[in-house]
Structure formats: structure tokens, C-alpha cells
Image 1 (cartoon, rainbow, N blue to C red):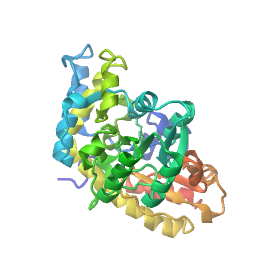
Image 2: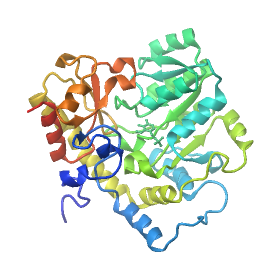
Image 3: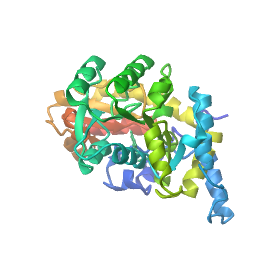
Image 4: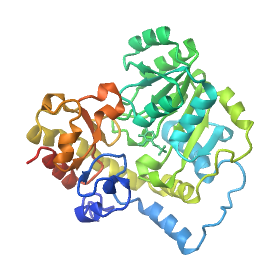
Length: 377
Ligand SMILES: Cc1ncc(COP(=O)(O)O)c(C=O)c1O
């Protein structure tokens, strides 16, 4: 029995550099540590299932019947078994991607000019969504007393909760979630909870779906998630939404089935394989990620001691404070010149000034190469 049954620790740098896809091809020649794709080979269960579809030429219309896809149905079971959250399959809908769910909720439950709260720094497509949809961004402090004061002042119609949080890796605990739920009731706020990173929480932490903290929370929440982050399937375009919010549920029921698009065969089949037979692979991935998030502290201490970093509680994204590094608001530029592609902090909003986000979902050896290159040594 090998200690690396899924080949997570032995990635070939040349093969990675040649891998198609935006992560490695946007800036060929640089070490890619930016967009949230993992460098690891896909779970064997997923490869086998998709290969079998191809081998059988089974690429026609699927035989799923009406209503939610098999992956969306499996989502109900998974929420029960992993998180003790019991939901009704009638409130579950397939999506093309998580952002589609966020945009549908923002578009149908709020109006142009309305304020929407969001924790900053924020996953940048949320910022673009608010700007493009003419909604007013209200910065939500992580401190909940401060958040209450902001709500009193700004009266946002909705909160986009990124839980676990990208890019900081913060996992909201039960007391935080309960307080946010109370505030949502008090200020009559819709909560759009993006839980795409939920399977990437490190022990002893645990993910608690926001809507599961009580019926009062669920009744005003839209939860959006996908198998795509934890199983590295982002190109397959499948996500799922639980609509606890009654008004939104009713509004969606006014549209014919598949009005917003029908789910992709490969996306659904991959999610089913991942959630049925992929957990051993995912546990192995979490083992490497856990090791990497701590190894990164040691590597930075040796090679880039001016960079401040706290290992995230979830995700494979490190939020690096480079403000003491002497490279200004946009430290990414220097790292790019040194051969490493990281995400620019300012992309995540004004508090990201002086930061970069580094993706450590790679082999320990590649991570070391990345940090050494960033240090210019
Ligand atoms: C918080 C968050 N939401 C959504 C997404 C993207 O999901 P999708 O491609 O399904 O829209 C990402 C991708 O990194 C993410 O980090």
C-alpha cells in the first residue's frame, strides 16, 4: 500500500505546465498559484464514471426523469449525512454554476440601487455582480456588533455570505451564524449563502450550513454550493441551490422547467461519482492540504519573513499580507516578475491592498518551489 495512492504528492512540474485550462495557460512559463483549481489528479471514481459514459457513447439526453437531477437528489442525502441538515428535495434546484444562483437571487429579490452586504475582502465575482447589477455594496464587518451597527445605518436588502470565506478561509461558527440569523430577521434581510468551500474545512473545525441554524434562518436563505471546489470539477459547470426563502421559491415556480438552463450530463455524473465514491480521495486531498497550509508558514518564515500569514480554517487559499514587504499596494507584480502567478489582493476589494492570494492545492514539492521563486532566490 503506497502512502500516496492518488498521486497527490508526486506532481510532475512539466506535465502541470502543459496542462490545458486557464490556471496554467493564462501566463505560460509562470508557476500557477492563482485561480481556485487544484493541481491534483481527479478522483478515480470521477474519471471512471466519465470514461464509461464516453466508452459507451452515452452522450445523448439523460434518462433522469423530471425534477432535480440525480446529483441534486444526492445533495439532499449528503446534507443529512455530513451536516445533519434535513431538507426537502422539492426546494432543491440544479444550476449551471454557483454564481448563477447568486445572480438569480440578487436579480429576483432585490432592485437596482438596493444595498447588499458582503464581507470584505470578497470573492471578486461577487463585487462584479453587484457592480454589473447596479446594487450598492455595503461592507459587512466580521465583528457582529459592528455588523449590527452597519445594518442599522445601511438597511441592506440582502447579505451574500461566503461561508467558508474566500479569500480569508474564515469558517463562521455556530454562535456567529446564529447571531447573523437573528440580525437577518431583525433587519428583514435575505441571506444568499455560498457554501462551495464547505467540504474544505480543516479539523477540528466543522461546517455548519447557515440555513440549518433554525427555521427562521432557512426561511430567508438561498444556499448555493457545488462539488466543484472540493473535487476539482469547476470546468464541468454544475451546481445546486436550496431555496428555503419562500418568496424566491414561489417566484422560481412561475418559470417553466429548465427556463434557466438544464444541467450538464458530465457535471451531474461527476458530482454523483464524487459524492458516492470520492470521499476517500477527498480525505487524502485534505491531508495534503492540511500539511501544505502549515508548511507554508514554515516556508514563509524562512524565505519571505516579511509576509504575514495565518493558516486558513478552510479552503486551499492563503491570504498573504505583504504590506511589510515593501512592494506597495500590488505585491503581485513583483511575484509575477519572479515567475509566480498569484491572485492580486486588490481584486478582492479595498482591504486587499498589499495582499496576494496564493493557491496551495499542489504537491508539497511544488509549494516549496513556488515560495522559493516568490522570494527571488
Ligand atoms: C466562494 C466561491 N463561490 C463561487 C465560486 C465559483 O463557482 P462557480 O464556478 O460554480 O460559479 C468560487 C470559485 O472559486 C468561489 O470561491
